[in-house]
Figure 1 (cartoon, helix red, strand yellow):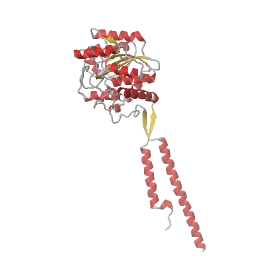
Figure 2 (cartoon, one colour):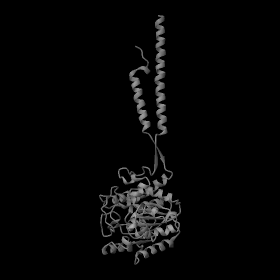
Figure 3 (spheres, rainbow, N blue to C red):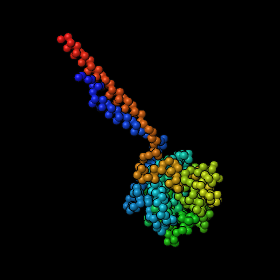
Length: 385
């Protein structure tokens, strides 16, 4: 019995199968929309990758250093200011060593309306060498001029290993022409920014490192004088468009426990007198705020200069919707929300599926029409005969 192609079971099954495949392809298609500043982020990431390659050369890598950067130090050492056992602290430090963190810093800097040629005051710490390098990489990518004062002591898993303190890392990157930014001053760090929680051996070691680095040693008789010394040193250089703080240095954020509860991210000068904008919810916020007003951060806020606080990294990344940076499996270089938005369906894929369906139907339909006409002619000839 004659049947055109369009009525044959195997053809109908084939049509259905191909159509299902096209529907599946369309339903799973995505459109990637690049962020407007993606090229600056790529540049910052490339700079940080180059920095890491220099740092990790000939350096033993800690088992905790998931990305094998050479930027994760020991749990404890002579220059360790606070010894942690909290895995979330380690997680936050690891996140800052991935070059994607420099792309995140680009967002913070641009959200603060910083432009090429602007100068920024920066407080760096030995506790977060990854964040330090991320900030320097972002500054270089955006053409900013960072003026840096550092503190050398480090909490667990920071720049606290022999020959790899922050000043030594900074010098190595400058010597290899990655950056031309060097700290103009350095304090001990730790409790009261004077190393009050370090051993005598630890303080002596830090003093030796600072002396060998040919950097101004900031070591006044008390915290208030250290803060004043750093502020005066910043003010001697130039006017600033922002103050960037990395970590929990007492001079930068104030004395006492309150600095542990200060929110990460951008602090707007307009909100400087609202403690709820400065601190996470805490019954002692008002008390903490009195200490904060003594800090370098508040000094800049009072001059109507925004503060970019790179601290409490886990909460900071979650607040900005890029918590995937905390997941080492998902944190692939130059991938993710930092670089592009993802929309459901891809227009090109939809058009391809539609055109493919139409062409497939037309081919089978036209060929079936041809078969029917041919069969009718054959039947006419047979009837005449």
